[in-house]
Length: 215
Ligand code: SAM
Image (tube, rainbow, N blue to C red; front, side, top):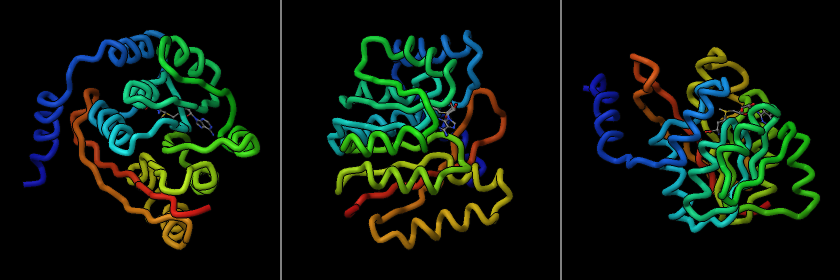
């Protein structure tokens, strides 16, 4: 019975997640400083951390820092993190939260900062896109150019964002179609269900994972 899925998700969270002082501090400090509670859920953070270790990612580019929760997940898994954040307040809180870890936070809009990273010849093993959904295709396109061949792109919030924007709206269809037609990548969409500490209903969502074949 699929309605039990959130209960199972909650049980798995209780079973799999171990106390992590850095992550716990990031969450409480972010709440104290008035940041919105929209960081990746703990199990998703753990997934990102496992993914980082599985592919041996040494460099991660993140679009959307917020308070640095997911940055910590990547950094603690052994990657150097470059994270882009448009909101100076979020950037400031993130810098507090990632102290002592190999995380640089660049202030600016993704579509302004990413071309500069490209100009500098930067290449990443993994790119995590977790910002505003409206520029997703442009951010994905830039991410492909910034990912080394064989590296991966994780595009978060795809399902929730599409439903929020009135699925099957033009945006969602064109994003899926464009990624599907993009010969530079091979991609999949993974639906997810989770419990959320602040919600009584299950959170249905899903992410796109792509491997970059060439530029
Ligand atoms: N990755 C974070 C985590 O899991 O802890 C959560 C990121 S939150 C969902 C999205 C963040 O992206 C917000 O802090 C927002 O200010 C930032 N953002 C929105 N549009 C952006 C853009 N165009 N460029 C860079 N950052 C952006």
